[in-house]
Image 1 (tube, rainbow, N blue to C red):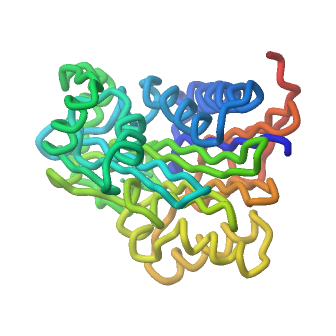
Image 2: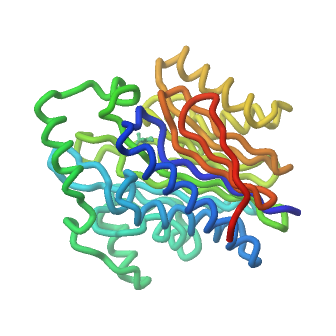
Length: 310
Ligand code: ASP
């Protein structure tokens, strides 16, 4: 089977001065994940690798570059899921781990649980040798400035997703040469969120879901809305009902918009390898690689492609 990977860098009104960095970031993360599968890596390895690259990139609201909560602190959430067995691992409210997706994978592989939070997640990280970093190391100067502005103007959280105050969670979905699917999502959440607020991203069925019987999904957007409609699972439900990947996302996002007035986006790869990236916000940076072709986009109804050079 041909490997396929799709990556997103968050659904929101990405300002023009961040557009190029966002697109470049998703293109290189998707390429890295795809090449890992071509070398024989699993879908799980590919989504972890792609998300780690995006966590390390300060352009995105995950790992380094994450948004700050009302106390001016970073609190990170992440999930990873293996479509072969439905095994999942997640962490929430971690403050000093540079790559929460790898900690989530360790939770999946080395504990009997699905999610560890805050202090317990840190204790576990220490026990498995995942290093901590000084919390300030993850905070960018740009985010500190945006946070000061947000504090001053106190913009409503829902408006965030269609304004320049929103932010850019990251995610990846993949299907490997053996037909296994996986997903991963990682975020700093929403700027100025309450201390210890956990959004959709690390919640199984909301921020992500992967099942070899249907496909894999990673979501982004207004977390409380995504949670109410369990968006990732809803999209896969529509895939199971026979809808194509693009339509399954569209129907689900429309439902979320109508039912709870929430905006967002998602990426999907189905078990047959059909993929899609769709959003209802102004923009979402995304990239996909399939058969040595790199597809990418930022604005609605816009899609570019180039031959993979590496
Ligand atoms: N869904 C994320 C959250 O609510 C934010 C995002 O996707 O940008 O935490």
